[in-house]
Image 1 (tube, rainbow, N blue to C red):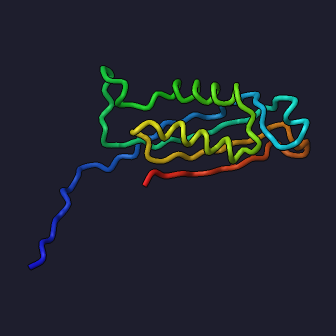
Image 2: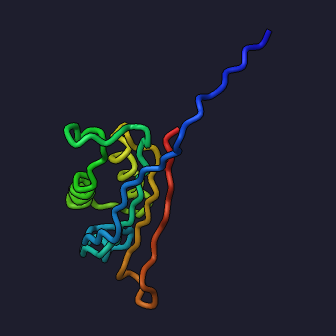
Image 3: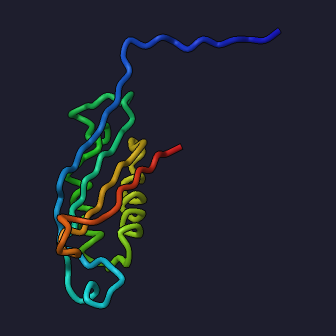
Length: 131
């Protein structure tokens, strides 16, 4: 005899996301000699999907992802370390943000703003999901 389990019907389906838009920092990034000597502007756009079933509680800030904390950690990460590639920087950001157990998925866009004169920006966009 096979037992079939039915999922409990829920009234709502949530998707909760923290957005950090157009954070622009001057950082050391790149493989070229001139990129190792002078900081360049990089724009960060980040969407962080968090566990939608953890109810926000103003008395327990661990129930939310603090965007100010994320920005400060990115600033700290980029202040003290040269990143050869945007891809390396992205992985370091993923590792840092995923330390928070609420985080389920991160969409990250990094753009160098001053590297190619004929463009407004060049960069990468990466998504990573916790399985």
